[in-house]
Length: 417
Ligand code: SF4
Image 1 (cartoon, rainbow, N blue to C red):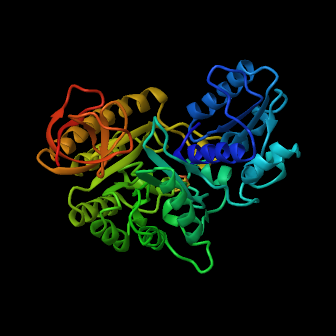
Image 2 (image 1 turned 135 degrees about the horizontal axis):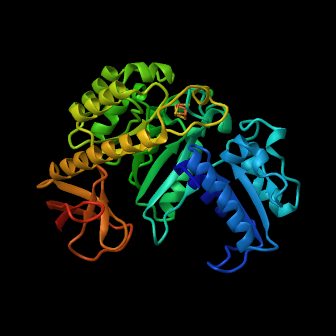
């Protein structure tokens, strides 16, 4: 369940279990072992995790059902006494070996989530998915008032550069055409290493390996988009011109109350600086609506800020209080208001996205083929190809028009030699 980091961890667990002699059960067949990585980032994600645990136990009678991940860490009592085996996040990296050797699983109450070794995360390419993921960072100590992640994943930790290089080389050998570099708070990469380094150092290390899959960054906080990074992105073809920079709110008051360390003006300045430095750059944002303190005026400030920026897309989420976080004790707008505000911003996001696609018409784009005649450009545009091509193939195309009726909208293109 949940974020790209969970997906990368799940894929790594599968790789490790396979290496230790397990085989994946065919779809629809009963399994002997089921592992669920839960998510607790929002109320609905936690609910879905609990439903999924019940559904898996029912679908695989007699199987060992192992529950782990963020929601187990946040609310262990909801999974206790239901016949699942519970595995604390601290020992996720050891889970395949423990399961294979029949050693007991440490329960979440026994250890802080960051007490054990760094859990790797690698999602290699497959027939259905050309984009792969490499986890290089875990944990966060920013403690934004609404966020449960620092409690479920613990302090920031990083994969050393040489280990990341080895993982990338493995993914390249497995045929990856694009690797998304992921982390829980990616901008904190390297601060815990000895000697300390940063994300730009990691990227330089990965790019120095020579030709290989193109690299895309997952999400980066606005105060971590430094000149060093922009310079790298502007000058290296292999580093996709794409930044996903969470905004969350355009109201200074709400940002301060939520412990987000920037103002709306600083956010705008960062986005505009990046857009000015990198031609064709795709900048996307997350926004949370219905946060504590978000009155109508604060919401209008968020809408106004988004309208003023050349964002390429928006991910909009209604806020849901997470038990144990400071924001859960604060009042917040009713869910109906949050839903209405989310609908307004999603519409605005869709309009921004179409405008971004239109700005690409006439441009030459490098594309990695996904499925069903679709591909993704370096700057994250969905592209309809005019000729059949195999997933993972790299092509150069010219954007001819925007198909606004398609869902999601996409660029219509022509292959270039
Ligand atoms: S930066 Fe804030 S929102 Fe992001 S994971 Fe850390 S605490 Fe959560």
